[in-house]
Amino acid sequence: MRKHTRRVLATSHIAGQLDPLGRLVEMVGELDVDAVMIVGDLVAAGGVHRADAYREVFGKLGAMRVPTFFVPGAHDAPLTIICEKPTTSS
Image 1: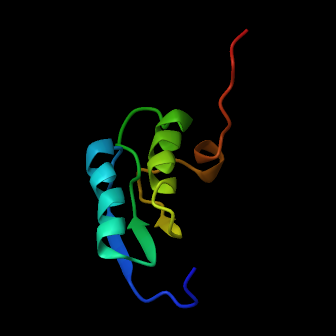
Image 2 (image 1 turned 45 degrees about the vertical axis):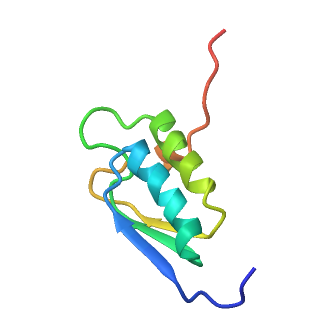
């Protein structure tokens, strides 16, 4: 791991689009960045903010293997929803 962060890849408004997010994961490796910053709207606006939509996005983000930071946007759910654990039905 590097001591200093020198190259940060910044993007915004992912809006739950997993294909472009997959390309972002590829770019992180290609560009040899030290960190990623995402500003606003991780999932699409409107409707109910479901924890599973955030899990999908965060799963892709975790594949980047670099520190990743995000600033919630106007349409993002409260942190309690984002971090909600899945429930199983019996």
